Amino acid sequence: SDSCFLPANDLTHSFSSYLKEICPKWAKLRKNHKEKKSVVMLIICSSALRSLELIKSMTAFKGDCRVLKLFAKHIKIKEQMNMLEKGVFHIGIGTPGRVKALVEQDGLCLNSTKYMILDWNWRDQKLRRMMDIPEIKKETIDLLEMSIIKLCREGSVKLGLF
Image (cartoon, rainbow, N blue to C red; front, side):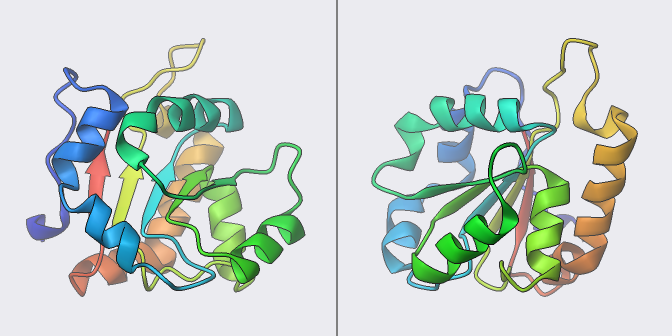
């Protein structure tokens, strides 16, 4: 149903201003989040490099929260699983393949996740959006089918397209 969709980015927004608009109660959500192995907001993009760009551009939004990089470049999956097990993280940002692998290996539980943002409009050097890249498209669809769609139907996760 449409109730699980947040307003899409109208292309006038910076990443921080978009997140502020779709998640006005972020400070409270952040403060109340105590679960390990989970994040409140999951941001999916096409590459490690793009993830790092978005982390830099969300400074105004995130405030005093912990962000975990969820991609494969230079970071072993076991390291990410250990970090998720030991600490509380508010935002997870990365590639669909790594997020999917973490969920499959019980390193990441999506039951506390309230927002999933897809980096929908950004284009790489070859002018491809994330859904134009076959392996990214497949992994994103797999991730959605694996658990996100069910959580949307239950009303616990909202989807946003940036």
